[in-house]
Amino acid sequence: MISEKRVLKKKFWFTEREIETYQQFFDCRLSDIRKRFLSNGAFTGLRPYLDNFSWHPVTHNKWYTANFYPNMGLKMAETYGFLHEVYGSTVSGKNLCSAKDLDAFITERELNQVVIKHVGGGVGSNLFIIDQIDKTEKNFSYQTNTGKILTHNDLEAILKRVDGGLTGYLVEERLHLHPEVRKITGDGLSSLRFETLQYGRQVNKVQYAYIRLGLEGMATDHSIRNGVYVPVDLDTGMMNKGLDTSRPIEDQWVSKHPLTGITFEGKTVPNWREFKEMALKASISTPGLHRVGWDIFPSSNGPRLLEGNVGGGIVIDQLMFGGFFDNGVFDDWMRYLATPKPDGSFSWRFKHWNKGRRLKPFEQFVSSILQD
Image (tube, rainbow, N blue to C red; front, side, top):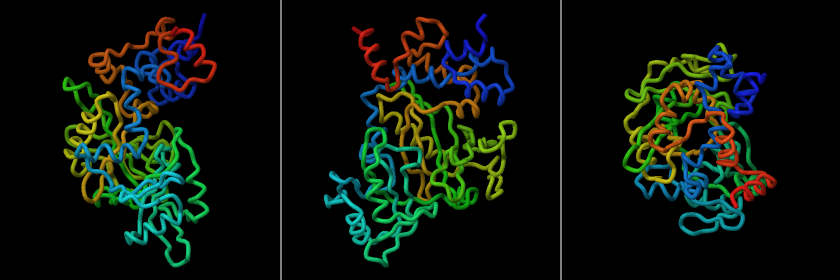
């Protein structure tokens, strides 16, 4: 007899980590997991129903993002230029191909702070928030919000990094947090994530939203850097208890920021209606991407779109909002996008095993044979 755990892994594509997480967090039986939760593996196989691959560059390449959405009327941080060893250029057409070119641009614009962000993303590993620029020496040095010093040699080295097949960095305006949010995080970062579902004019809605509350000294507000994820009520913008994944699984729901000690539960996100409107406008502006996670920054001058995210993991989302088969998220996908529900059958697995992910060379060969 095949064990229930083996069924979850082989037929529904759950990992051992996913199974353990859902079982412990919700204190549920193994037999309930496939009834309530969608695995990351199955979610990846369903990606072609949720986003059209030809539209991926709009959100995958952050240089495209920075040029596309402001033209659709969405406010973002001001983009100063594209820092690249060969193709680098400021928006005015001057060279931006090296650290010395960056020094010259900083001097010309009399800037004291900038953001340098890899065009391929990288969950903060290729994001440098420059809070201080030392202009006293012949070659400038750049200090990040984490205290790291970037010299010319460091900048020349990071310019060679490849992420998602892309090289180069955006140079952008340094945004600052809204004072009401900063009261909670101190000098930590924060952003809001809106998961939208869009299918032409038939449907354009926010399925759920949360705010990430980061910690001082961290490069981003993501969970891998101990950021707290706080579900937000879609109607009122009120924050609920948050998920602190740095704590033991039985004690992850918290009401206070772990460093500042400020209570966030019950507080309302400032300018909440503007955030929702921005997420929905970004969604309808990208017709080929039906499910997108929009990151929006609560700046002191109002909401600013950061980026759109397709794919990614869904474990934390289901910890915060319940299983997608319970909370209506998947029902919407089936209703509007004709997304087939995983049933564990051989036919379902055969149809979806090679969808939504980058295949290994041998898998590409097998897939090509099956498609002939």
